[in-house]
Length: 69
Length: 370
Image (cartoon, rainbow over the protein chains, first blue to last red):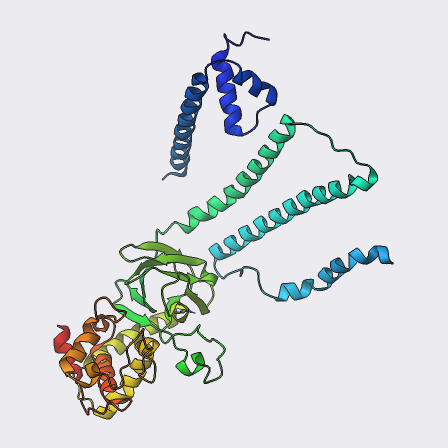
């Protein structure tokens, strides 16, 4: 088991991904909720939502470019 | 025997399948390449839904029956199963993507309005359609042709009740026709299922769509955006003809329009104006003011005995030509030609006991229209 404080960012990213997908195990949820400040999770969530929007925009740009529009 | 009673509804359902097929509730296959693609998509997605329904309800009912309490089933209490949850998120995702790919391909084709050979502006009015063949100098209104007697249950209803018009939209076979939709008053929507065209006609906006008719024939449609009292009385009829017949129709329609213009300078007798006026009245005015001129109390004023119609002739002409702001009375000066306007005003001034003896000449209307 890696040290949760060391891998805090990775845990937050994985939890945000799980939230976006809609499936999270109870074990991870309990771990996240006992790891102190929620700020890291909030910021990661907002950042990943923004990344998702940018990703969709880029995907549409790519599709339009390939379609020759 | 009694144990098989549950089979009865299923046997009944199987026996009635041919009747369900003949019931004609399914989408129509249509008569253009796009319409067939849309129909095929509809059927593919329908069968996907059927398969999902069978699997989901099958598993559900099997589980309910197999694990019933009378057989001593014990509930297992657990909070989550991440593997199953991931699976039932991924499967619908995959199904949706699989449906979206062919649907998007068809949508892109439907939105490709380029390379049209004929452009037709379609304008919705309360309650009729106007067709302008851009660059062809052809411009006409298409109104309901079903008689008021049929609508009022005073005559038997015809085969194409409320789906027939005086001037159909005529198109040639095999040419890409681009439609430009707009409206004059409220939002209408132009829908011809066989051509797979359904587009809103919005005042101040131009919407585009297109079709390549493949088979000569008559295709019928309706307004499909609630647009007021006679929303169900402004049908669409598309008359698809072979190219030679279409060219002939173009020439005939142009010469008819020229003859119409010429007739505005001729002398018309009161009897001629009355006869023509009655036709115009029944097509353009009777929907509100009623064929007997009595109107609808509280909604549309009566013309029989009305001071507007029996009084000052100039005011009467003005309201017919320019409409009345804030009411349903439209400006017919832009919709009807001089002869029709003169005829209908003459008719209104002399029908239903309004015997004023007044006669309005087409020339008088022509002067006012300039």
